Image (cartoon, rainbow, N blue to C red; front, side, top):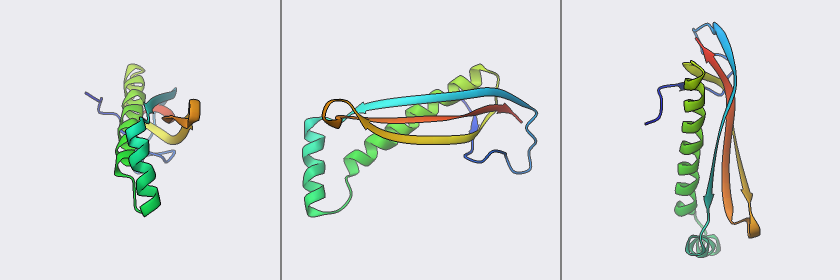
Amino acid sequence: MTPKIELTTTPTFEGRRITRYLGVVHGEAIVGANVFRDMFAAVRDIVGGRSATYERALAEAREVALGEMQKRAEALGANAVVGVDLDYEVLGQNNGMLMVSCSGTAVIC
């Protein structure tokens, strides 16, 4: 279960005062893009529209990465993470892997 650590992309929480900065925390998730998924996504690209399969894979990877970051923040004693940044990359042989990474500053507010 993901800890109850609040996240924001902004440097502060509106109406709340940060009392302590605990350091940078991060999370990563890498998912493989399998042959069938690639084949169906290629068909979708040819006929137009969105690739729901890839969207689901990215959403899953994003949740895993954010969850890891929240756990690291909780281990430091934080109750929030400010300045959250999300990055998406493709990597591996033939760009067969999707990576989502995130980072932010663990704080107490």
